[in-house]
Image 1 (cartoon, one colour):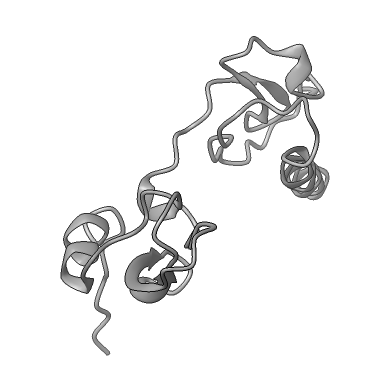
Image 2 (cartoon, rainbow, N blue to C red):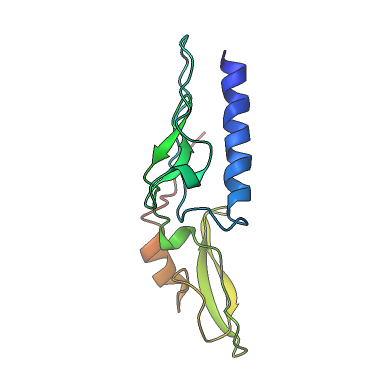
Amino acid sequence: MLRGTMAEVSLSQDIERGRGQLGWAHPGTCPKMPVLQTFVPCNHTCTDDRQCPPEEKCCYDGCGRSCLPPVRRSRCQLPAEPGPCQVLQPRYFYSPNHGRCQVFFYGGCQGNANNFRSRSECHRVCIKDFPQFAIFI
């Protein structure tokens, strides 16, 4: 039973990744749900976002798929976005993949909110969202 459920999670994640390229995907990200081990069949009340109200997404709910409110991404989860302009100012963004603030070159216009003038400002805003844990051996 668990193996089938894990395959379902993998499939749903693949579907979620592909949706952003389609015009009908609702904004936001599905919440992460734990895999439920159950002996009853899982319910699927939706197969894609088109079957959900505009403020919800068709997400894996722990067993099947249902319409759920999306989670908002914090500014510190956004990718580095230099924008279309060519000024090339050194700025910092938080990389959740690397667990630290990194330098990038901001073009001077547009971009997104994961854009800080200093490493210390980036740390102050983002490290509280993604605390670092020290492991002592």
